[in-house]
Length: 216
Image 1 (cartoon, rainbow, N blue to C red):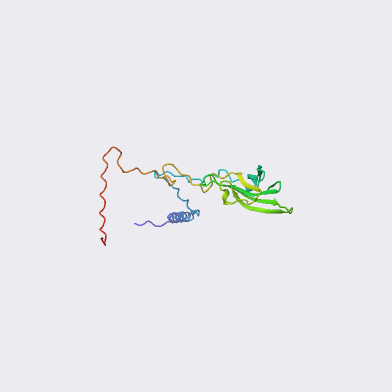
Image 2: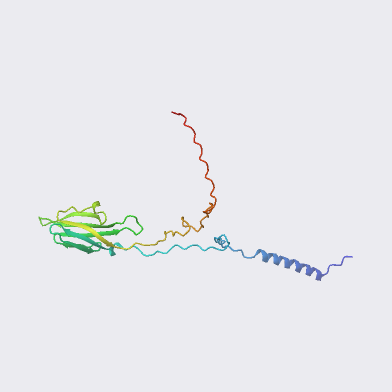
């Protein structure tokens, strides 16, 4: 026999429906994250995270041109007197009837195969008419004086040194690791050949060569 519906049972049913609607509303209103997912970290074969290698720091720096010091040799071929002119780029020194002006000096880096010490100099001479005349302007090299020479009947000029430094390590430097010629971390493979003292496998027989198409 069905029980008659009362106000109490009606209110209970309505309360249950309202509670379900509130629960559904709370589920739909849950906040959604808008941040992009983090990139997965590189892992090694063992599964542990491998930190990214930082670029090597810059070690040392190249000496600015204005701070370099060059020693230029000057020889008077008439009396055989020679002297050393120590100057920086932009300076000029006079010795008698000649003026030597240094514009630049350079040395090759320590890792270069060919070692050169060069200086860009300008040589001015005082002539018989009491006027200065430029007799040379260009690069001179200590190790290869024949590349460029000062053609003057009295004076000879050549570079003797250039004091400067070069950077040793920069951001583009790739360090070579032991056990790998390519600089990677891959271990060297073991040789598949047998150890010395054992029976070595017989070498393969040479392949037969085809007879010439036009025998003589």
